[in-house]
Length: 467
Image 1 (cartoon, rainbow, N blue to C red):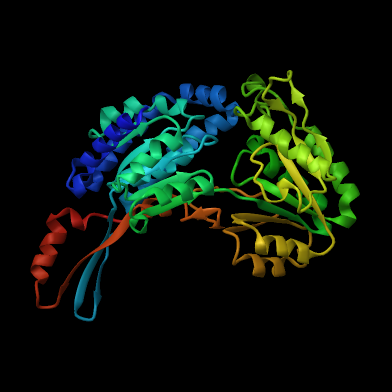
Image 2: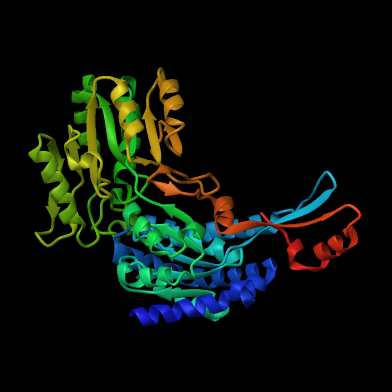
């Protein structure tokens, strides 16, 4: 889309908000819920074709593709259930009588990712819509086809401009939108560099409410007694959906004394991963573990591997399958990563497991202490001796500390957060509903209008259920 076309879509979204006077923000919560429930019904009718599109466009195996669709529907339904079950409470502070409601902030610009284009995008925009905001959504260049299946659904059910879609290069489409100063909230999943650039484009960034999920370099830490204990989780955490997850384990810390055993067992596990196409094994429910990567990713993986190898790392796997033009590569393991290598800090976001050998836990603590990213850490151990120290230190760094399980986001009821350059805000069913709302207070004092106050609560939309 051209800049003028993008700004036309923005104007529609602005008109739908109408400074809070628009049809959608002025609807009752129950009426908005009814509309979104209709959307869910229509989405379910396209479940199979959406699964097919995720397999064909982004290489997600059929089990993971189906899971993404189903998890998205579940998330929306859980959000609706929470809204319906919320009980508003009136509170009195001394002689002041109050009622607090969470109400929309306005116009939201949403940019979702390519790896979970439906789930992670809808986990932001549907709660924003349910709470009365209007949204303009940038369709990702890769992963956008699934959204093309949903545009007509939203347009046929929601008032015009409530949810607008734009397409094109992010650097071309989004800065002009931000420059208008009409955006009140940014829902962003992507790189911290892109997020910073976009935020700075807003003429009044102080009033921009930001929810973002960014990069991660999640640590998987093996204790000496946890090598066999954590192998399966480490392999899953490193290579699930090709390692193309912000929650993937991006660097494994292994005690140097266990190097020989770890390398032998880890190679065996990696060798057992099934490399193939997204639909392979559908008839016997044995999906491919490693599938084709998006355009340009194989080249990037090779750059990272070559850099590490040239600086002394040992490489296992990583061969291209199907010819030089193929985007299917075997999972790779980089043994012996060091600080001068790009993989020390860069998020590989692909099928590369990175292994660092350590002599002392102080090395591990220091990496976590000074690292740029701070999303999650996994600790693998049998007896657990020494975990307390890591937990005490890392509780002020990471959003989640996992013991003997790979890093991950689920369940969606659980807070998903990060620090530093990994996130701004927290994701969960409840937190998503709160992300683009603001607390608005109705107040009076004893003897100053209690009857009017009660009538307003009873007869106006202010007295609706809130989270």
